[in-house]
Length: 110
Image (cartoon, rainbow, N blue to C red; front, side, top):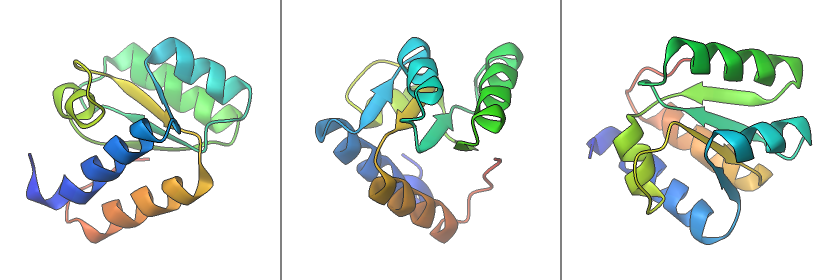
């Protein structure tokens, strides 16, 4: 696990255990359309089409998004197998996750 993103991954796990995280493409799309998603997290390893689809959807629905982490690390953080897309549905957790990314020295797109 990348030391710079340790806090980010820990908060993702907390979000999942609290039930404030949508996991997988279909659930994330639904959360974005229903305007329940506050932050969409897309893996750096996402295919070009998946990346384009979610970025365009987030821009259309004015939802914040970040492109960070590998599929394996995102899945491991939430106690699942590899995952490409996650959506946080809580404003407070969104702010905490963004703060963690700002404090890390990892480049983040989005």
